[in-house]
Image (cartoon, rainbow, N blue to C red):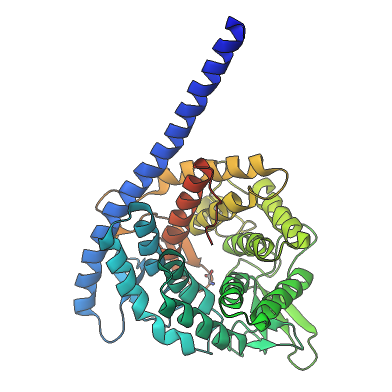
Length: 402
Ligand code: GLY
């Protein structure tokens, strides 16, 4: 081996070592921040609980005055805080986080019988799903399977989809793009129980959504209303977006994450293609700001007066890390995810402030004037999930541990 070649080889090893260390240091710093903020949050939860009544036990957001909003187990956001605790336990291996994760996860257990919501995936998979992944607790497995039974009751085979809301004002049988996220619970329950009906429901729902929710530019409608007797599409509208024909930012992120996950679970290439199309819509839309943190709706006019949605950026980063592990074009998706994560540092709360939330500037439901430009728990959850995925990629591990 000549000297020049040896030198080149040495430079390559040194640079790849230092690059790896830098990425790992970024993750370590972000987790250090998350650990200390979540300590603050636990104290704040105790303070808020003394003022609250009944079953308000889990943090969801800050209100306009900066007070912590606590929610009961049947709120669609109840699984995110327990899920964050599981990610902290996974990273630190500290039994104190395990204890906290178990405690907050247990609050949600009554939801396993709920048939009044499509959000059981968010509620039960983020909490019990992560708990089962990390502990193999057989009780958690039973909860996941029971929740899947309850969720399956909302499936109508004529429509070929799970009903999202029971609100008749929106429509008789509304299905929202967000509902793609709840399919992960069904795939897991099918694996754990051997009951293929959960798998079939998930795949049918994903196919129906693929057929009806997307526009030619690969952005998605928020709500598609069906006739439950015939399965025909009645209309395509929005509930949380700027307009029926606009691209609500978090909806695009839910779709990206949902179809990436469906490809993982089925290896059906049409889901991978759809995930790539959505990623390409998000990343190439001229309305996406240069820091890759979208406005709450891509097409809302008068951008100077619009708020961002940090939660959409966090969900997108988590999804892009996974998408980057499938097939071609993986480098671009990983680079973009890294870029989002780097840019989200500018959206972090000041240490010790914001009642322990991690990220500021999410937008929950602008048309309803709800949770605008505030910290929201699902932004923090998907941020920690994205960090965990980033670290797994840096360590050459499968991005999603099953
Ligand atoms: N699934 C409700 C939301 O994303 O706001």
